[in-house]
Image 1 (cartoon, one colour):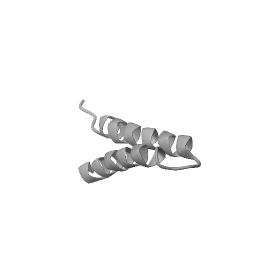
Image 2 (tube, rainbow, N blue to C red; image 1 turned 135 degrees about the vertical axis):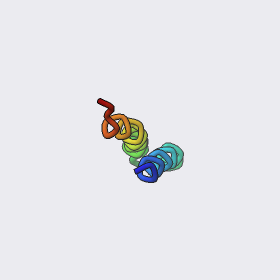
Image 3 (cartoon, rainbow, N blue to C red; image 1 turned 60 degrees about the vertical axis):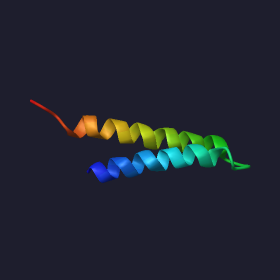
Image 4 (cartoon, helix red, strand yellow; image 1 turned 45 degrees about the vertical axis):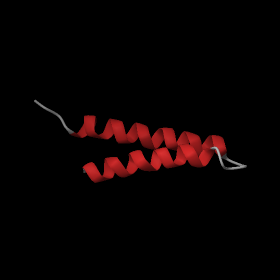
Length: 51
């Protein structure tokens, strides 16, 4: 599962950088990067529960 979180995080960083180089849809791509990084941070907290 760590690989999935790492890939999501790296993809989000890539989308951040890509958004500044696009002529169109740069806000949408930037927002997709924010979502990817948010998921990469939230999923481990959600799926690792300690009782």
